Length: 128
Image (tube, rainbow, N blue to C red; front, side, top):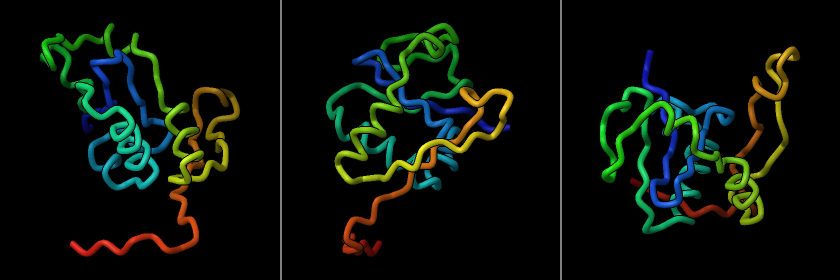
């Protein structure tokens, strides 16, 4: 099983947990457009802050002078919803609510239906 990543902002002592956007492993974050868009949008809005994608496998390691512990990972407030709201306001994504995956725990087991906002359809063409 792969590492479970969260974007940690060490400067503000908060995180962006992408679990409800379908991206927790490195490849999922990179290949799930909404997860990648929200992570990048957060990073752009917090330029200059010390942040990194930290995994559960990083417990015991040091980032920016701070030892990673499970207590730290579990104590940081999640700013994913706020970042989604700002990205919607900025027309980066559109928000179509939640898709409940388990009716027994609808507030815990769900997926956010966030989609890339094509705007007027004239997104810039990027050729690599």
